[in-house]
Amino acid sequence: MADFINVTTLNHLAKNVLAQCEPLNDLIVCGEVSGFTRHYKSGHLYFTLKDENASVKCVMFRNQARLLNFEPQNGMLVLAYGHATIYERDGAFQLYVDYMRPFGAGAAQMAFDALYKKLEAEGLFAPERKRPLPPVPHCIGVVTSKTGAAWQDVQNVIGRRWPMVKLLLAPVNVQGLEAERSIVAGIRALDRDPRPELILVTRGGGSKEDLWIFNSERIAREAAACHKPVVSAVGHEIDTTILDYVVDLRAPTPSAAAELCVPDQAEVLQKISVLQRNIQNNIQNHIQICYNKYTMASVRQAYQHQVQKTARFAQELKRASSLIQQAQRHQIALSDSALSAAAALAESLNPYGILARGYTIVKRGGEVRPVEDLLPGQQIQVQGDCAEADCLVQSVREIHRQENKGI
Image 1 (spheres, helix red, strand yellow):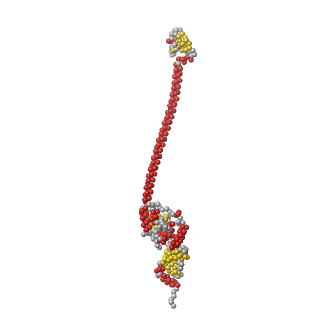
Image 2 (tube, helix red, strand yellow; image 1 turned 90 degrees about the vertical axis):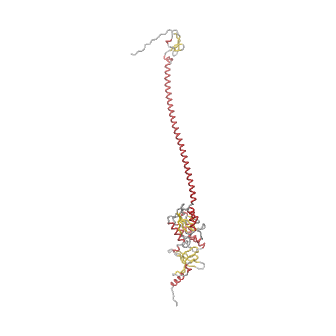
Image 3 (cartoon, one colour; image 1 turned 60 degrees about the vertical axis):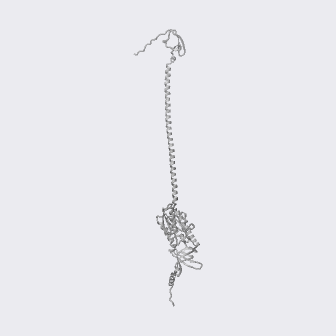
């Protein structure tokens, strides 16, 4: 009778045999996911891959599961990368999965839609989260492959449009098993670096499978957590990834992204020229306005001076007129007084003025004659105040007056 072995030994032997089978150590298995479970404590994934004829149990440990760029769903067709062996405790044949991605348009779209709805519900696509790009950046961080065409396109476009900006490259893998970790690390490093003012995540065109890494939840969340504006440019214009919805600005191509990140020096110079002309025109207009105001002020001042001068002349004229009128009144008064005095004097000298006092005047031939000129026998007229008499001179006698002498 042959020696027996226990179950533990059997399972151990089977595991060793499978480990020596090279095809089982580097597998890519296509199958439909069923019975998907994520262990809430450990974070390991447990599920089954099946096709129309068979199924296999699968395990994906936490460290590998956290690198997934999609959320597996039951019914999703996937490609699982890993190795097959026996779980010794249960003797169960299992596929240990290191990496997994959706396979086929339907599965990929299912994974895309599921992640889109999840992140949208969290508000990561909200327009109010979008930040403006700096208008004139001094440094731009670029997350891309250092050997890819995208890096060359970015350098060429920015060198032509705005050569004074500095480009800081975070070289990453843009496809393959290490791509997700590499891109996340590149975004994080540039976000922590104080030099770049914005981050450009880009790669050139490729198949949907090549670009699928940019549908990674980890990459999307890393971009959303950045403190700096993030621009994405993945593939061509028709290619849209989850990253494009999260970032602050999505460009259709790497070249277009470079154009959006910096101004065009030719346009800036033209704007400066236009501004210079506008400034010169504004200054000239301002000078003309000031000159017009000065001219108007001078005219107004001259007019006011003339008005004041005219007012002074009018006041002086009024004062002179008043003085003239006063002098006229004074002169008239003096003339009236002199005239009255002259009239009084004339009245006093009028020989006829004494008639009213009872005196008479002796006239001869119409002329008043002194008495001493008369001769006896001459005809004379004696005129009184109210009557006149014709008389005949009988005699003329001389009268001697005695002068009064002082005592």
